[in-house]
Image 1 (cartoon, rainbow over the protein chains, first blue to last red):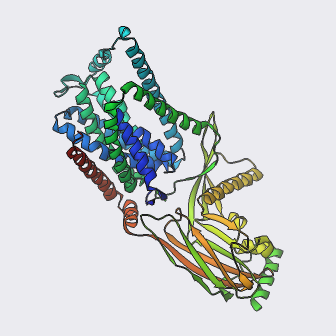
Image 2 (cartoon, one colour; image 1 turned 90 degrees about the vertical axis):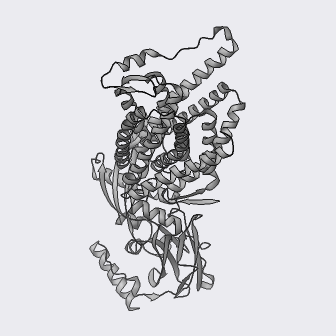
Amino acid sequence: MEIYLPIAGISINFFLIIGIGGLVGFLSGLFGVGGGFLLTPLMMMIGIPPAVAAASDSNQIVAAASSGAFAHWRLGNVDFKMGLVILAGGLTGGTIGVQLVKILRAIGNFEFVMKVVYVIMLGLVGGAMFMESLRTIRRSRNPETCVLAPPEPKLAKLFAKLPLKMHFTRSGLHTSAIFPFSIGTTVGIMAALLGVGGGFIMVPAMIYVIGMPTIVAIGTDLFQIVLTSANVTLQQAIVNKTVDLLLALILLAGSTIGAQFGALAGKRLRGEQIRILLAIIVLILAAKLFLDLILTPEDLVSLAPAKGGGH
Amino acid sequence: MKGGLRLLLALGLAAALGQPAGAITPEAKEKIVTAASKNLIEIGLTYRGDQIYFFGVNPVPGADLIIRLTAEKDEEIKLSVKGRVGPFWMTVKQYDVTGAPFMYKIHANKPIREIISPETAKELEIGYEAIYHRLKFTLARGSEPDTLAEKEKEKREVFRGLIKIKEKANLYNIVEVPERLEIPDGKLYKHYFRFPPAATEGKYQVETFAFLKGELVGYGKDVIEIKKVGLEQWLTETSQNSPVFFGIMAVLVAVVAGLGVGMIFRKGGHH
Protein backbone atom coordinates (compact mmCIF):
# COMPACT_ATOMS: atom_id res chain seq x y z
CA MET A 1 0.00 0.00 0.00
CA GLU A 2 1.56 3.24 -1.16
CA ILE A 3 1.04 6.51 0.61
CA TYR A 4 1.87 9.95 -0.73
CA LEU A 5 3.74 12.17 1.71
CA PRO A 6 2.74 15.75 0.89
CA ILE A 7 5.82 17.61 2.11
CA ALA A 8 8.44 14.99 1.28
CA GLY A 9 6.73 14.85 -2.13
CA ILE A 10 7.22 11.15 -2.58
CA SER A 11 5.05 8.08 -2.73
CA ILE A 12 6.26 5.37 -0.39
CA ASN A 13 5.10 2.08 1.09
CA PHE A 14 3.01 2.71 4.19
CA PHE A 15 4.17 -0.51 5.92
CA LEU A 16 7.82 0.36 5.32
CA ILE A 17 7.44 3.58 7.33
CA ILE A 18 5.33 2.05 10.06
CA GLY A 19 7.80 -0.88 10.17
CA ILE A 20 10.80 1.42 10.62
CA GLY A 21 8.85 3.37 13.25
CA GLY A 22 8.04 0.06 14.94
CA LEU A 23 11.64 -1.17 14.85
CA VAL A 24 12.98 2.06 16.35
CA GLY A 25 10.12 2.06 18.88
CA PHE A 26 10.96 -1.54 19.80
CA LEU A 27 14.62 -0.64 20.34
CA SER A 28 13.72 2.43 22.37
CA GLY A 29 11.32 0.39 24.51
CA LEU A 30 14.04 -2.20 24.99
CA PHE A 31 16.87 0.16 25.84
CA GLY A 32 15.00 3.15 27.16
CA VAL A 33 16.53 5.50 24.57
CA GLY A 34 14.58 7.98 22.49
CA GLY A 35 15.56 6.51 19.14
CA GLY A 36 15.59 9.76 17.14
CA PHE A 37 19.24 9.16 16.38
CA LEU A 38 18.31 5.93 14.57
CA LEU A 39 15.16 7.23 12.94
CA THR A 40 16.59 10.11 10.90
CA PRO A 41 19.34 8.07 9.17
CA LEU A 42 16.88 5.25 8.44
CA MET A 43 14.40 7.72 6.93
CA MET A 44 17.17 9.08 4.71
CA MET A 45 18.05 5.58 3.56
CA ILE A 46 14.54 4.93 2.28
CA GLY A 47 14.57 8.15 0.26
CA ILE A 48 13.06 10.85 2.48
CA PRO A 49 14.93 14.12 1.81
CA PRO A 50 17.35 14.69 4.75
CA ALA A 51 15.85 18.01 5.82
CA VAL A 52 12.31 16.59 5.81
CA ALA A 53 13.51 13.52 7.72
CA ALA A 54 15.08 15.62 10.49
CA ALA A 55 12.18 18.06 10.83
CA SER A 56 9.48 15.36 10.80
CA ASP A 57 11.40 13.33 13.38
CA SER A 58 11.41 16.37 15.68
CA ASN A 59 7.64 16.48 15.25
CA GLN A 60 7.37 12.78 16.07
CA ILE A 61 9.57 13.23 19.14
CA VAL A 62 7.16 15.85 20.52
CA ALA A 63 4.47 13.16 20.46
CA ALA A 64 6.64 10.31 21.68
CA ALA A 65 8.06 12.28 24.62
CA SER A 66 4.86 14.02 25.71
CA SER A 67 3.17 11.01 27.28
CA GLY A 68 6.32 10.08 29.23
CA ALA A 69 6.79 13.68 30.32
CA PHE A 70 3.19 13.82 31.52
CA ALA A 71 3.59 10.61 33.53
CA HIS A 72 6.81 11.82 35.19
CA TRP A 73 5.24 15.20 35.93
CA ARG A 74 2.40 13.48 37.79
CA LEU A 75 4.89 11.44 39.78
CA GLY A 76 6.74 14.63 40.71
CA ASN A 77 9.94 13.69 38.87
CA VAL A 78 10.34 16.97 37.02
CA ASP A 79 12.68 19.64 38.39
CA PHE A 80 10.94 22.58 36.72
CA LYS A 81 13.57 25.14 37.65
CA MET A 82 16.38 23.01 36.22
CA GLY A 83 14.14 22.13 33.27
CA LEU A 84 13.55 25.80 32.50
CA VAL A 85 17.27 26.64 32.63
CA ILE A 86 18.05 23.76 30.25
CA LEU A 87 15.04 24.71 28.16
CA ALA A 88 16.29 28.30 27.82
CA GLY A 89 19.44 26.78 26.34
CA GLY A 90 17.40 24.34 24.25
CA LEU A 91 15.27 27.09 22.73
CA THR A 92 18.37 29.17 21.95
CA GLY A 93 20.16 26.18 20.44
CA GLY A 94 17.12 25.02 18.49
CA THR A 95 16.60 28.44 16.95
CA ILE A 96 20.28 28.71 16.01
CA GLY A 97 20.17 25.15 14.66
CA VAL A 98 17.20 25.81 12.36
CA GLN A 99 18.93 28.87 10.88
CA LEU A 100 22.05 26.73 10.43
CA VAL A 101 19.96 24.18 8.53
CA LYS A 102 18.67 26.97 6.29
CA ILE A 103 22.17 28.23 5.48
CA LEU A 104 23.58 24.74 4.94
CA ARG A 105 20.72 23.81 2.63
CA ALA A 106 21.23 26.96 0.61
CA ILE A 107 24.90 26.20 0.05
CA GLY A 108 24.09 22.55 -0.69
CA ASN A 109 25.99 20.99 2.19
CA PHE A 110 23.28 20.22 4.75
CA GLU A 111 23.43 16.50 4.03
CA PHE A 112 27.22 16.52 4.26
CA VAL A 113 27.37 18.31 7.63
CA MET A 114 24.51 16.20 8.98
CA LYS A 115 26.28 12.99 8.04
CA VAL A 116 29.59 14.15 9.52
CA VAL A 117 27.91 14.99 12.84
CA TYR A 118 26.04 11.68 12.75
CA VAL A 119 29.20 9.68 12.09
CA ILE A 120 30.97 11.32 15.03
CA MET A 121 27.99 10.98 17.35
CA LEU A 122 26.98 7.44 16.42
CA GLY A 123 30.63 6.38 16.48
CA LEU A 124 31.13 7.74 20.00
CA VAL A 125 27.82 6.49 21.39
CA GLY A 126 28.12 3.08 19.72
CA GLY A 127 31.76 2.70 20.74
CA ALA A 128 31.12 3.68 24.37
CA MET A 129 28.10 1.38 24.59
CA PHE A 130 30.04 -1.50 23.04
CA MET A 131 32.96 -1.14 25.49
CA GLU A 132 30.63 -0.73 28.45
CA SER A 133 28.55 -3.82 27.72
CA LEU A 134 31.68 -5.84 26.96
CA ARG A 135 33.01 -4.89 30.39
CA THR A 136 29.69 -5.83 32.03
CA ILE A 137 29.71 -9.23 30.34
CA ARG A 138 33.32 -9.90 31.46
CA ARG A 139 32.51 -8.74 34.97
CA SER A 140 29.50 -11.03 35.29
CA ARG A 141 31.75 -13.94 34.27
CA ASN A 142 34.30 -13.24 37.03
CA PRO A 143 32.29 -11.66 39.82
CA GLU A 144 35.39 -11.26 42.08
CA THR A 145 36.87 -8.54 39.89
CA CYS A 146 33.65 -6.54 40.06
CA VAL A 147 34.53 -2.90 40.61
CA LEU A 148 31.52 -0.67 40.30
CA ALA A 149 32.71 2.77 39.28
CA PRO A 150 30.89 5.34 41.40
CA PRO A 151 29.48 8.39 39.61
CA GLU A 152 32.27 10.90 39.10
CA PRO A 153 31.62 13.70 41.59
CA LYS A 154 34.68 15.76 40.60
CA LEU A 155 33.09 17.24 37.49
CA ALA A 156 29.91 18.10 39.35
CA LYS A 157 31.95 19.89 42.02
CA LEU A 158 33.99 21.76 39.42
CA PHE A 159 30.95 23.04 37.53
CA ALA A 160 29.20 23.96 40.78
CA LYS A 161 32.00 26.49 41.40
CA LEU A 162 31.10 28.53 38.30
CA PRO A 163 29.21 31.80 38.83
CA LEU A 164 25.43 32.31 38.38
CA LYS A 165 24.56 29.98 41.26
CA MET A 166 20.98 28.83 41.65
CA HIS A 167 19.14 26.60 44.08
CA PHE A 168 17.33 23.60 42.58
CA THR A 169 14.99 22.25 45.27
CA ARG A 170 13.71 19.15 43.50
CA SER A 171 17.21 17.94 42.61
CA GLY A 172 18.54 19.02 45.99
CA LEU A 173 21.36 20.99 44.36
CA HIS A 174 22.98 24.38 44.71
CA THR A 175 24.94 24.78 41.50
CA SER A 176 25.79 27.11 38.64
CA ALA A 177 23.28 27.62 35.85
CA ILE A 178 26.00 27.94 33.20
CA PHE A 179 26.50 24.25 32.50
CA PRO A 180 22.79 23.29 32.31
CA PHE A 181 22.23 26.22 29.94
CA SER A 182 25.13 25.32 27.65
CA ILE A 183 24.33 21.61 27.47
CA GLY A 184 20.75 22.67 26.62
CA THR A 185 22.06 24.86 23.79
CA THR A 186 24.27 22.08 22.40
CA VAL A 187 21.45 19.54 22.43
CA GLY A 188 19.07 22.14 20.91
CA ILE A 189 21.41 22.65 17.95
CA MET A 190 21.70 18.89 17.50
CA ALA A 191 17.92 18.53 17.72
CA ALA A 192 17.51 20.83 14.72
CA LEU A 193 20.44 19.49 12.73
CA LEU A 194 19.83 15.79 13.28
CA GLY A 195 16.19 15.45 14.32
CA VAL A 196 17.06 13.89 17.66
CA GLY A 197 15.73 14.46 21.16
CA GLY A 198 19.19 14.23 22.66
CA GLY A 199 18.30 12.24 25.77
CA PHE A 200 21.32 10.00 25.31
CA ILE A 201 23.58 13.03 25.90
CA MET A 202 21.37 14.98 28.25
CA VAL A 203 20.60 12.27 30.81
CA PRO A 204 24.24 11.21 31.45
CA ALA A 205 25.22 14.90 31.60
CA MET A 206 22.50 15.60 34.17
CA ILE A 207 23.46 12.65 36.34
CA TYR A 208 27.25 12.71 36.14
CA VAL A 209 28.07 16.34 35.44
CA ILE A 210 25.27 18.28 37.11
CA GLY A 211 24.75 15.66 39.83
CA MET A 212 20.99 15.19 39.65
CA PRO A 213 19.20 12.06 40.97
CA THR A 214 18.60 9.61 38.07
CA ILE A 215 14.81 9.59 38.15
CA VAL A 216 14.62 13.40 38.31
CA ALA A 217 17.12 13.59 35.44
CA ILE A 218 14.91 11.36 33.26
CA GLY A 219 11.69 13.24 34.14
CA THR A 220 13.27 16.64 33.63
CA ASP A 221 14.88 15.51 30.37
CA LEU A 222 11.52 14.39 28.96
CA PHE A 223 9.96 17.69 30.02
CA GLN A 224 12.59 19.73 28.22
CA ILE A 225 12.60 17.40 25.16
CA VAL A 226 8.89 18.04 24.57
CA LEU A 227 9.39 21.80 24.59
CA THR A 228 12.72 21.86 22.75
CA SER A 229 11.37 19.58 20.00
CA ALA A 230 8.16 21.60 19.85
CA ASN A 231 10.25 24.73 19.29
CA VAL A 232 12.37 23.00 16.62
CA THR A 233 9.23 21.67 14.87
CA LEU A 234 7.65 25.13 14.85
CA GLN A 235 10.83 26.82 13.57
CA GLN A 236 11.42 24.17 10.89
CA ALA A 237 7.82 24.63 9.73
CA ILE A 238 8.28 28.41 9.51
CA VAL A 239 11.86 28.70 8.25
CA ASN A 240 12.40 25.57 6.15
CA LYS A 241 8.84 24.29 5.54
CA THR A 242 10.07 20.75 5.93
CA VAL A 243 7.72 19.29 8.56
CA ASP A 244 5.73 16.38 7.13
CA LEU A 245 2.94 15.91 9.66
CA LEU A 246 1.63 12.80 7.89
CA LEU A 247 5.06 11.15 8.04
CA ALA A 248 5.39 12.09 11.72
CA LEU A 249 2.02 10.57 12.60
CA ILE A 250 2.73 7.29 10.80
CA LEU A 251 6.11 7.07 12.54
CA LEU A 252 4.41 7.77 15.86
CA ALA A 253 1.89 4.96 15.33
CA GLY A 254 4.69 2.52 14.48
CA SER A 255 6.99 3.56 17.31
CA THR A 256 4.25 3.49 19.97
CA ILE A 257 3.31 -0.08 19.12
CA GLY A 258 6.97 -1.08 18.80
CA ALA A 259 7.82 0.47 22.17
CA GLN A 260 5.21 -1.68 23.95
CA PHE A 261 6.73 -4.86 22.55
CA GLY A 262 10.22 -3.53 23.25
CA ALA A 263 9.37 -2.94 26.90
CA LEU A 264 7.94 -6.46 27.21
CA ALA A 265 10.97 -8.02 25.52
CA GLY A 266 13.27 -5.97 27.75
CA LYS A 267 11.89 -7.71 30.82
CA ARG A 268 12.79 -11.13 29.45
CA LEU A 269 16.16 -10.55 27.84
CA ARG A 270 19.58 -10.01 29.35
CA GLY A 271 20.52 -6.35 29.31
CA GLU A 272 24.20 -6.35 28.41
CA GLN A 273 23.82 -8.75 25.50
CA ILE A 274 21.03 -6.68 24.02
CA ARG A 275 23.09 -3.53 24.61
CA ILE A 276 26.00 -4.98 22.68
CA LEU A 277 23.58 -5.69 19.82
CA LEU A 278 22.34 -2.09 19.82
CA ALA A 279 25.97 -0.92 19.92
CA ILE A 280 26.69 -3.01 16.81
CA ILE A 281 23.62 -1.63 15.00
CA VAL A 282 24.70 1.91 15.85
CA LEU A 283 28.28 1.26 14.69
CA ILE A 284 27.11 -0.27 11.39
CA LEU A 285 24.93 2.80 10.80
CA ALA A 286 27.91 5.05 11.54
CA ALA A 287 30.11 3.07 9.13
CA LYS A 288 27.47 3.23 6.39
CA LEU A 289 27.18 7.02 6.73
CA PHE A 290 30.97 7.35 6.80
CA LEU A 291 31.27 5.41 3.54
CA ASP A 292 28.66 7.76 2.02
CA LEU A 293 31.02 10.61 2.78
CA ILE A 294 34.19 9.14 1.27
CA LEU A 295 33.08 6.89 -1.58
CA THR A 296 32.67 8.51 -4.97
CA PRO A 297 28.98 9.39 -5.17
CA GLU A 298 26.95 7.92 -8.00
CA ASP A 299 25.73 11.38 -8.96
CA LEU A 300 28.04 14.34 -8.70
CA VAL A 301 25.29 16.79 -9.58
CA SER A 302 22.29 17.13 -7.29
CA LEU A 303 19.29 19.40 -6.91
CA ALA A 304 19.56 21.97 -4.15
CA PRO A 305 16.26 23.00 -2.56
CA ALA A 306 14.75 25.87 -4.48
CA LYS A 307 12.91 28.76 -2.89
CA GLY A 308 9.83 27.54 -1.09
CA GLY A 309 11.18 24.45 0.60
CA GLY A 310 9.52 21.14 -0.10
CA HIS A 311 9.16 21.47 -3.85
CA MET B 1 1.32 24.23 -48.58
CA LYS B 2 2.00 27.91 -48.24
CA GLY B 3 3.08 27.44 -44.67
CA GLY B 4 5.60 24.84 -45.69
CA LEU B 5 7.10 27.20 -48.21
CA ARG B 6 7.33 29.90 -45.59
CA LEU B 7 8.96 27.44 -43.27
CA LEU B 8 11.52 26.42 -45.85
CA LEU B 9 12.28 30.02 -46.66
CA ALA B 10 12.61 30.89 -43.01
CA LEU B 11 14.85 27.94 -42.34
CA GLY B 12 17.01 28.87 -45.30
CA LEU B 13 17.21 32.42 -44.08
CA ALA B 14 18.00 31.30 -40.56
CA ALA B 15 20.73 29.00 -41.81
CA ALA B 16 22.15 31.82 -43.86
CA LEU B 17 22.14 34.26 -40.99
CA GLY B 18 23.15 31.64 -38.43
CA GLN B 19 20.46 32.53 -35.94
CA PRO B 20 17.17 31.01 -34.88
CA ALA B 21 14.31 31.95 -37.12
CA GLY B 22 11.32 31.50 -34.83
CA ALA B 23 9.23 31.09 -37.93
CA ILE B 24 7.55 27.76 -37.33
CA THR B 25 4.18 28.44 -35.75
CA PRO B 26 2.73 25.02 -34.88
CA GLU B 27 -0.67 26.51 -34.02
CA ALA B 28 -1.05 27.61 -37.65
CA LYS B 29 -0.76 24.01 -38.89
CA GLU B 30 -3.62 21.63 -39.44
CA LYS B 31 -5.09 20.68 -36.09
CA ILE B 32 -4.57 17.10 -34.99
CA VAL B 33 -7.67 15.69 -33.41
CA THR B 34 -6.68 14.09 -30.11
CA ALA B 35 -8.36 12.60 -27.08
CA ALA B 36 -6.96 11.84 -23.63
CA SER B 37 -8.33 9.15 -21.34
CA LYS B 38 -8.54 11.89 -18.73
CA ASN B 39 -7.41 15.48 -18.25
CA LEU B 40 -7.17 15.65 -14.50
CA ILE B 41 -4.94 13.69 -12.15
CA GLU B 42 -5.74 13.95 -8.47
CA ILE B 43 -3.06 13.41 -5.84
CA GLY B 44 -4.79 11.73 -2.93
CA LEU B 45 -3.48 9.81 0.07
CA THR B 46 -2.62 6.70 -1.91
CA TYR B 47 -1.28 8.45 -5.02
CA ARG B 48 1.52 6.56 -6.70
CA GLY B 49 1.71 8.25 -10.06
CA ASP B 50 -0.73 7.80 -12.91
CA GLN B 51 -0.94 6.89 -16.56
CA ILE B 52 -2.91 8.66 -19.26
CA TYR B 53 -3.74 7.23 -22.68
CA PHE B 54 -3.83 9.46 -25.73
CA PHE B 55 -5.51 8.76 -29.03
CA GLY B 56 -5.48 10.79 -32.21
CA VAL B 57 -5.85 10.92 -35.94
CA ASN B 58 -2.74 11.41 -38.01
CA PRO B 59 -3.57 14.44 -40.21
CA VAL B 60 -1.51 13.14 -43.13
CA PRO B 61 -1.51 9.34 -43.37
CA GLY B 62 2.00 8.03 -43.15
CA ALA B 63 3.40 11.15 -41.48
CA ASP B 64 5.83 10.66 -38.58
CA LEU B 65 4.77 11.73 -35.12
CA ILE B 66 6.67 13.31 -32.29
CA ILE B 67 4.74 13.80 -29.08
CA ARG B 68 6.09 15.96 -26.31
CA LEU B 69 4.99 16.22 -22.69
CA THR B 70 6.15 19.31 -20.82
CA ALA B 71 5.19 21.21 -17.72
CA GLU B 72 3.56 24.51 -18.57
CA LYS B 73 5.88 26.43 -16.30
CA ASP B 74 9.67 26.28 -16.36
CA GLU B 75 11.64 25.70 -13.22
CA GLU B 76 14.23 27.86 -11.58
CA ILE B 77 16.57 25.36 -10.07
CA LYS B 78 19.80 25.28 -8.21
CA LEU B 79 22.21 22.46 -8.92
CA SER B 80 24.95 21.46 -6.52
CA VAL B 81 28.12 19.92 -7.89
CA LYS B 82 30.09 17.66 -5.57
CA GLY B 83 33.85 17.62 -5.51
CA ARG B 84 36.59 16.11 -3.41
CA VAL B 85 37.70 18.00 -0.32
CA GLY B 86 40.39 15.95 1.38
CA PRO B 87 38.92 12.48 1.74
CA PHE B 88 35.32 13.73 1.60
CA TRP B 89 32.85 14.42 -1.16
CA MET B 90 30.91 17.62 -0.61
CA THR B 91 29.24 20.38 -2.58
CA VAL B 92 31.88 22.69 -4.00
CA LYS B 93 29.97 24.51 -6.71
CA GLN B 94 26.44 25.63 -7.40
CA TYR B 95 24.73 26.74 -10.58
CA ASP B 96 21.44 28.58 -10.86
CA VAL B 97 19.70 27.22 -13.91
CA THR B 98 16.68 28.82 -15.52
CA GLY B 99 14.56 27.61 -18.41
CA ALA B 100 14.57 23.91 -17.56
CA PRO B 101 11.19 22.27 -18.02
CA PHE B 102 10.06 20.55 -14.82
CA MET B 103 8.98 17.57 -16.88
CA TYR B 104 10.04 16.63 -20.39
CA LYS B 105 9.07 13.43 -22.17
CA ILE B 106 9.10 12.63 -25.83
CA HIS B 107 7.58 9.77 -27.77
CA ALA B 108 8.41 9.35 -31.44
CA ASN B 109 7.65 6.53 -33.82
CA LYS B 110 11.28 6.48 -34.95
CA PRO B 111 14.54 8.25 -34.04
CA ILE B 112 14.00 12.01 -34.02
CA ARG B 113 17.05 12.67 -36.19
CA GLU B 114 15.44 10.55 -38.93
CA ILE B 115 12.26 12.64 -38.73
CA ILE B 116 13.49 16.23 -38.56
CA SER B 117 16.66 18.22 -39.09
CA PRO B 118 18.66 19.40 -36.05
CA GLU B 119 17.64 22.97 -36.90
CA THR B 120 13.93 22.18 -36.78
CA ALA B 121 14.44 20.19 -33.58
CA LYS B 122 16.19 23.13 -32.01
CA GLU B 123 13.53 25.56 -33.09
CA LEU B 124 10.63 23.45 -31.88
CA GLU B 125 12.58 22.52 -28.73
CA ILE B 126 12.48 18.83 -29.42
CA GLY B 127 15.21 16.70 -27.82
CA TYR B 128 17.67 17.23 -24.98
CA GLU B 129 20.07 19.20 -27.17
CA ALA B 130 17.36 21.77 -27.83
CA ILE B 131 16.70 22.01 -24.09
CA TYR B 132 20.37 22.60 -23.44
CA HIS B 133 20.32 25.64 -25.69
CA ARG B 134 17.41 27.28 -23.91
CA LEU B 135 18.94 26.88 -20.45
CA LYS B 136 20.76 29.70 -18.73
CA PHE B 137 23.53 28.75 -16.31
CA THR B 138 24.70 31.21 -13.68
CA LEU B 139 27.50 30.23 -11.33
CA ALA B 140 26.18 30.89 -7.81
CA ARG B 141 29.06 29.55 -5.75
CA GLY B 142 32.55 28.23 -6.44
CA SER B 143 35.26 29.18 -8.88
CA GLU B 144 34.68 29.93 -12.54
CA PRO B 145 36.63 27.72 -14.98
CA ASP B 146 39.48 29.60 -16.69
CA THR B 147 38.83 29.09 -20.36
CA LEU B 148 35.68 29.32 -22.41
CA ALA B 149 36.08 25.70 -23.52
CA GLU B 150 36.32 24.53 -19.91
CA LYS B 151 33.25 26.59 -19.02
CA GLU B 152 31.31 24.91 -21.80
CA LYS B 153 32.57 21.49 -20.71
CA GLU B 154 31.43 22.11 -17.14
CA LYS B 155 28.02 23.34 -18.27
CA ARG B 156 27.63 20.17 -20.31
CA GLU B 157 28.52 18.07 -17.28
CA VAL B 158 26.00 19.89 -15.09
CA PHE B 159 23.39 19.43 -17.82
CA ARG B 160 24.12 15.70 -18.03
CA GLY B 161 23.73 15.53 -14.24
CA LEU B 162 20.39 17.32 -14.45
CA ILE B 163 19.12 14.88 -17.13
CA LYS B 164 20.24 11.96 -14.96
CA ILE B 165 18.36 13.29 -11.90
CA LYS B 166 15.24 13.91 -13.96
CA GLU B 167 15.39 10.54 -15.72
CA LYS B 168 15.81 8.76 -12.38
CA ALA B 169 12.63 10.42 -11.12
CA ASN B 170 11.00 9.48 -14.44
CA LEU B 171 10.35 13.15 -15.16
CA TYR B 172 12.41 13.16 -18.36
CA ASN B 173 12.70 10.53 -21.02
CA ILE B 174 12.85 10.16 -24.76
CA VAL B 175 11.50 7.02 -26.39
CA GLU B 176 11.96 6.65 -30.14
CA VAL B 177 10.45 3.29 -31.04
CA PRO B 178 7.30 2.36 -32.98
CA GLU B 179 6.17 -0.04 -30.22
CA ARG B 180 5.75 2.85 -27.82
CA LEU B 181 3.84 5.03 -30.27
CA GLU B 182 1.61 2.85 -32.36
CA ILE B 183 0.27 4.21 -35.65
CA PRO B 184 -1.69 1.33 -37.25
CA ASP B 185 -2.00 1.91 -41.03
CA GLY B 186 -0.33 5.27 -40.51
CA LYS B 187 -3.65 6.81 -39.50
CA LEU B 188 -4.91 6.37 -35.96
CA TYR B 189 -2.30 6.53 -33.26
CA LYS B 190 -2.28 5.68 -29.58
CA HIS B 191 0.18 5.81 -26.73
CA TYR B 192 0.36 6.64 -23.04
CA PHE B 193 2.39 8.87 -20.78
CA ARG B 194 3.30 7.83 -17.29
CA PHE B 195 3.12 10.59 -14.66
CA PRO B 196 5.46 9.56 -11.83
CA PRO B 197 4.76 10.39 -8.15
CA ALA B 198 7.41 13.12 -8.44
CA ALA B 199 5.22 15.02 -10.94
CA THR B 200 3.83 17.74 -8.72
CA GLU B 201 0.83 19.97 -8.99
CA GLY B 202 0.46 22.09 -12.07
CA LYS B 203 -0.56 22.12 -15.68
CA TYR B 204 1.14 19.90 -18.22
CA GLN B 205 0.81 19.99 -21.97
CA VAL B 206 0.97 17.13 -24.39
CA GLU B 207 1.78 18.36 -27.88
CA THR B 208 1.63 16.23 -30.99
CA PHE B 209 3.73 17.21 -33.98
CA ALA B 210 3.20 15.50 -37.34
CA PHE B 211 6.05 15.67 -39.85
CA LEU B 212 6.12 14.68 -43.49
CA LYS B 213 9.57 14.62 -45.05
CA GLY B 214 10.93 16.74 -42.23
CA GLU B 215 8.26 19.35 -42.53
CA LEU B 216 5.63 20.15 -39.91
CA VAL B 217 2.18 19.30 -41.28
CA GLY B 218 0.00 19.08 -38.21
CA TYR B 219 -0.14 20.04 -34.56
CA GLY B 220 -2.38 19.16 -31.64
CA LYS B 221 -2.36 19.94 -27.96
CA ASP B 222 -3.91 18.51 -24.81
CA VAL B 223 -3.68 20.02 -21.37
CA ILE B 224 -3.43 17.78 -18.31
CA GLU B 225 -3.77 19.13 -14.82
CA ILE B 226 -2.36 17.53 -11.71
CA LYS B 227 -3.64 18.72 -8.38
CA LYS B 228 -3.60 17.59 -4.81
CA VAL B 229 -6.98 16.92 -3.26
CA GLY B 230 -8.38 16.46 0.22
CA LEU B 231 -5.91 16.08 3.06
CA GLU B 232 -2.88 16.21 0.75
CA GLN B 233 -3.97 19.54 -0.67
CA TRP B 234 -4.81 20.98 2.71
CA LEU B 235 -1.52 19.91 4.31
CA THR B 236 0.57 21.23 1.41
CA GLU B 237 -1.27 24.52 1.13
CA THR B 238 -1.27 25.17 4.86
CA SER B 239 2.42 24.33 5.25
CA GLN B 240 3.40 26.62 2.37
CA ASN B 241 1.00 29.53 2.88
CA SER B 242 0.43 29.59 6.66
CA PRO B 243 3.65 28.09 8.06
CA VAL B 244 3.13 29.56 11.55
CA PHE B 245 -0.32 28.04 11.88
CA PHE B 246 0.94 24.77 10.36
CA GLY B 247 3.85 24.60 12.83
CA ILE B 248 1.63 25.24 15.85
CA MET B 249 -0.86 22.68 14.57
CA ALA B 250 1.87 20.07 13.99
CA VAL B 251 3.04 20.53 17.59
CA LEU B 252 -0.48 20.40 19.06
CA VAL B 253 -1.48 17.34 17.01
CA ALA B 254 1.71 15.62 18.16
CA VAL B 255 1.09 16.42 21.84
CA VAL B 256 -2.53 15.26 21.69
CA ALA B 257 -1.58 12.10 19.76
CA GLY B 258 1.25 11.37 22.19
CA LEU B 259 -0.91 11.83 25.29
CA GLY B 260 -3.78 9.87 23.71
CA VAL B 261 -1.59 6.95 22.75
CA GLY B 262 -0.01 6.99 26.21
CA MET B 263 -3.43 6.78 27.83
CA ILE B 264 -4.59 3.90 25.61
CA PHE B 265 -1.58 1.82 26.52
CA ARG B 266 -1.73 2.66 30.20
CA LYS B 267 -5.32 1.45 30.30
CA GLY B 268 -4.06 -1.73 28.66
CA GLY B 269 -2.12 -2.29 31.85
CA HIS B 270 1.45 -2.51 30.62
CA HIS B 271 2.70 0.41 32.70
